[in-house]
Image 1 (cartoon, helix red, strand yellow):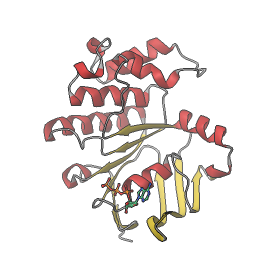
Image 2 (cartoon, rainbow, N blue to C red):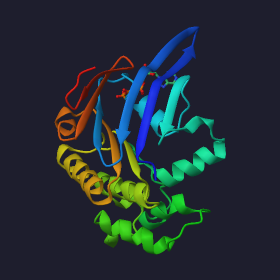
Image 3 (tube, rainbow, N blue to C red):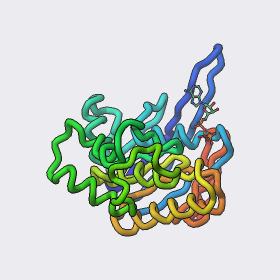
Length: 230
Ligand SMILES: Nc1ncnc2c1ncn2[C@@H]1O[C@H](COP(=O)(O)OP(=O)(O)OP(=O)(O)O)[C@@H](O)[C@H]1O
């Protein structure tokens, strides 16, 4: 179980039309499991890129990412994928549920072809209950509201018992009240399961409720609010 994620001089740049864009640069951060961190900043400031790098969905162009002191990107591609499965759950703004699968089947989907120590269907029902949607287990995504779809997506993100939840604008497609409820659900998962949460948002009011607020601008971290300003 990974308890600390550290990045050192992390950088991701893109080359297009002969011009290099540094989506993120000079990122030096440490995250402790159990902490609820919000990442905030204007559009294009690098929040999603940083989250993808921290979650190993994307490779940096420079710098290092350490999980409990181990250089993650030194592992083989398959081992990185296994490690991601064991440690991380992802939640996205667009939910990304499979439209032809029921809520229960969507939640079971990450476990497909994986050997786990628990009964898969029982576990899927347990997380559906945790997000308050056991009665909707046979519903298709199209039969659910936006907030309910995001709850299913959260259940899918936690079904494999990850240590970390990485959420990219999970409330971005929801009205304020529903967004607040989703935020509270993530807060309770943080408290009950001890999941480290990295929460990208545009909403300063939601961000202010996190334990820690990291602000990005032009690919740089410009403040890290737990006291110190960088
Ligand atoms: N695949 C890509 N190819 C080229 N440039 C990219 C790519 N992905 C991101 N960028 C650039 O990197 C910068 C950071 O993008 P990123 O999506 O991380 O920002 P963001 O803060 O998450 O924005 P938003 O709040 O709008 O989602 C932007 O200038 C963007 O155009």
